[in-house]
Length: 353
Image 1: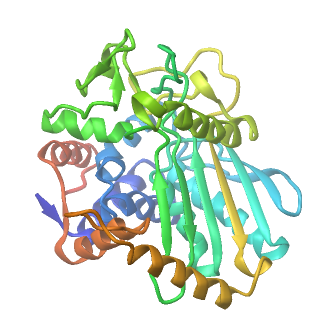
Image 2: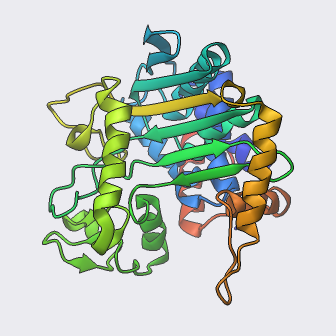
């Protein structure tokens, strides 16, 4: 089924208001959530709305958080999200990073006591309008086994970097530090399709293509899969440390689960989920116009690289940018199971999809 962006925005915003979010926060959360659907990252968009509602029902999301800085220097800060929606906490924390970068040249913010914040790219891209480079990371509930391990100790722990260009579209890299994000497994489950080899292992550490493997004690594999997972393991570890060990959030196996039917660990080492944001003013390094002209040259050079037969050389951000343009005009497709979930949420609050 196809829904216009504006239609989904009105519905989602009404749901967030229904759980008690102030109007401005409901708008912010909706924009952050729908950025995923718009950019073609369907696993992190409105398909997750029912998950946020269930967390609120379980008392694990504060709809009216007092988000604030609890420690800072001229270029760094720790932000306490007060248990709020990550979709609300993260934009406010990124704004702190941008403001510090405006004054000091760079700004670095680690966040504690938050929740799932949608797609990392949305937050990193907040820097682009200010001629800044943006960085966004977050840890997540432990579904990933470190290299040579059977235990799930890390999350999918994404990294996003947004870099402004001039005439060329901006460079936006946004990726999980696993071979595939858990949301892609959820999509395969809804479609009843197998997972590609190298995404997951079973409870005995053997390769599996069963998208339901995690429910039986299996684990996602770090980026690099069966032969190079040590690289993804290192990247995921860095995200976990920057996001949580640095801020005072939960890390490793103590990160609370996104699903409401699983309880957070009884012995937390911190508060909530952790994020990390960075903003770097380009003109703290060289004149912005000069930098962006060279970024245009960099992008053009890579875009013109000779391609393998049947393939196209893409710049990070190309597929998502093209998808956003297409879906703004033609609408956002939703799987039937997602529509059913949204209708269930709508009935709960008297909001018509």
